[in-house]
Amino acid sequence: MSVLVVADHDNQNLKPVTLNVLGAAKQLGGDIVVLVAGEGCGAVAEQAAKAEGVSKVLVADNAAYGHHLAENVAALIAEIASDYSHILAAANTTGKDILPRAAALLDVAQVSDIIRVESADTFVRPFYAGNAIATVQSSDPIKVITVRGTGFDAVAAEGGSAAVESLDIVKDAGLSEFVKEELAKSDRPELTSARVVVSGGRGMQNGENFKMLYELADKLGAAVGASRAAVDAGFVPNDMQVGQTGKIVAPELYIAVGISGAIQHLAGMSDSKVIVAINKDEDAPIFQVADYGLVADLFEAVPELISKL
Amino acid sequence: MKVLVAVKRVIDYNVKVRVKPDNSGVDLANVKMAMNPFDEIAVEEAVRLKEKGIATEIVVVSIGPKAAQEQIRTALALGADRGILIETDEEVQSLDAAKLLKGVVEKEAPQLILLGKQSIDTDNNQTGQMLAGLLGCGQGTFASRVDVEGDSVVVEREIDGGLMDIKLKLPAVITADLRLNEPRYASLPNIMKAKKKPLETLSVGDLGVELKPRLKTLKVEEPPKRQAGIKVSSVDELVEKLKNEAKVI
Ligand SMILES: Cc1cc2nc3c(=O)[nH]c(=O)nc-3n(C[C@H](O)[C@H](O)[C@H](O)COP(=O)(O)OP(=O)(O)OC[C@H]3O[C@@H](n4cnc5c(N)ncnc54)[C@H](O)[C@@H]3O)c2cc1C
Ligand SMILES: Nc1ncnc2c1ncn2[C@@H]1O[C@H](COP(=O)(O)O)[C@@H](O)[C@H]1O
Image (tube, rainbow over all chains, first blue to last red; front, side, top):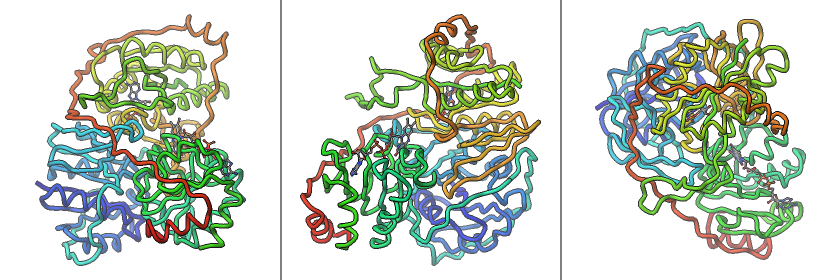
């Protein structure tokens, strides 16, 4: 048995979620090979080689892979797939884009967003916005799987010394081309791996008021998230959305401010260790999952909270 | 330009599902069903392309039981021109759905193929990518803007770090994200008109596909229940609890 883990990275740094995917790979057992497809991504390969449990790193360094275009990367994965029993990637927007295409090229199913490994062919995954948890068994010869990072402990980033091999396969489908990217810049911790997350909803009323949450976040070393309503209303950018169709977070502390607690929002945060809700409506569904609920006007409670931390 | 839109019949997004006591699945008896919300957004985008004079015909296709005609009729009421139901009572997994859609694409030869990014029942987020792979065409997933420019299309995509624009050759597959547009409501006259629009029914076999589920659901369980905690009466009490009881700050 041999597991291929498709690394997520920005050509300079390995994304931390890849270490969680390696955690899932470790539970499967067998050799673990990491694929780094990118452009000028040598540093990423070096980082991957140091990760715990990795036996080999394959680097496909070519302009065709520079922006993770699915048409090219999926073709590369399909080409090398026959050496592996499992192919894993993070269930983030990169993995979700590439892996199902690779699965189709291989004529196998994909198991999306697993949170547990039961055995080499059986996996646990939430569906119906996390309102049900399925145990599914795959009969395919190659199991193609996306992994929910919060479901698995990260392996150690240091300590390994895997061999790095370059892969001279260029798949340039010529179907797609990168135009531009607008990436959010922030000095705060990354949302999906932050220890504390402060999220705001429609109750924040506008983008300006989110400053209050940034201030609170900075006191707590937290990342800032949002509900769909806050993103749709244009208060904050899309990369901050937490939920069924946004990011999945499971921090030690989640503070929901002016968020009602729709099932689609809960799907993204209900695995948090401690949940705090600040909402002026005492019947808001968020209080049904909150460990500590404060029924209050957020415009009074949040400034007071900032001053008392 | 012909546009094909795939719409799936799913449980209404407002319904909180219940797991069956025998753990064999979720209880879908007598629950409200609807068009997958992302597919509504895909239909709306197609209709807007038609209103702009870019799309000339909109074909909607659904795979599922006879009752999925309702979702096709809804799409027709929103402005699609005709519908195709691939009728089956069997479970259709994403790979097979992609194969069936590929069959329809080959018959209809659309330039643009729109899907939702994710079904809210399976939460798979696969079918569009699989279809694009099978067709050997480009894919623009999680789209928040679609600009057709001659024989290509620029798609703005919602990615984890922000936004990314890519350019695809047509024909291409695009999957709709939440902020692509805000779907309209069907008007009563349009609902009446939709009843007269053509709706063709095909079988799985008509498309040369054999359903082969690869994933077997062994059991379905309720997620671990979170206990509702306590209400604190003041910010001071909250800070005290977080420090001394939960020990998270
Ligand atoms: C297909 C689909 C996918 C979706 N995916 C997601 C997703 O990924 N993430 C997500 O979050 N949602 C998602 N949604 C949307 C979800 O259904 C809800 O509409 C959304 O979460 C509501 O956001 P909200 O709680 O901020 O707004 P609301 O429900 O409007 O709640 C606002 C809350 O703020 C409180 N409030 C107002 N003023 C104050 C004040 N001054 N002080 C204190 N409290 C105040 C109110 O009491 C209320 O409870 C999805 C929906 C669909 C259909
Ligand atoms: N049975 C189906 N009938 C029509 N379209 C479907 C079907 N299954 C999936 N799709 C399309 O594929 C998208 C993604 O579905 P999924 O991969 O199941 O999350 C949906 O939003 C639909 O547009």
